Image (cartoon, rainbow, N blue to C red; front, side, top):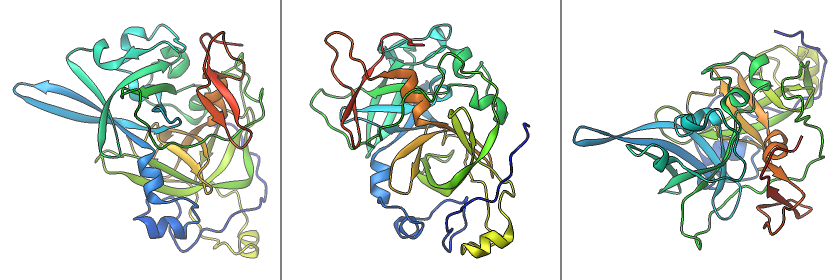
Length: 322
């Protein structure tokens, strides 16, 4: 593990809840400082499943999570959640090139559930397997930050159908060096740590929201960690009204991968890609947007997303731009 730079940093109050654990419902979500409702999060989240035939019966397995980012059903999820769909294309990176998951694997059916409705899935943009996950099922913190484990996909819905979604904030361009995605890095404390909520569907398939703080960031802006490290002095924590025994780190289970990482205002700040009982690895939303979107329109292209509050249009890239 790379050396950590320890600072006494400004921290946020952890209300009378156990940081790092799942919230039990709307009241706890409000008490934790969220400015959005439980329904807001659930309606904008996506549960991704695989349906297959087992003899006479149809069976399903839960693959992971995602979150909606456009009115017409565009969503973000992790590459490793969609790896079976993309297996035949794992040597290739694709940009704004529809790939129907169910047609790619005719004996299987990929389904995305949101707001109690189900849709088949089309993947629009993804990098090759090496750039996305190196073909590995688990990564160390050093490794996960250097992977771009995310894809842009779409719900296969009628052209007139509309979905609730998370607006994405404008950001400073060029912080992510796309030409050096595997550059070495130092982890640095966040100033201040970010109060966050991670939404997804753990193994049992029931929607959950985990609550805690991001306290470490990659100095190349590619991602963050919520880690169980003693970065704060007890005296300082008492001085800002935080219990010295506050739990750092977060509970993130398998199949929450691909879920949204939200700040208290409801802004997506990343995608959850890695986790355990007390550590969460997050790839930043800027990492995803810089990889797959452009502020420059190709000829005849329509905006895919409008960033807030600037109303800046983003367009899906049709080729990598390094």
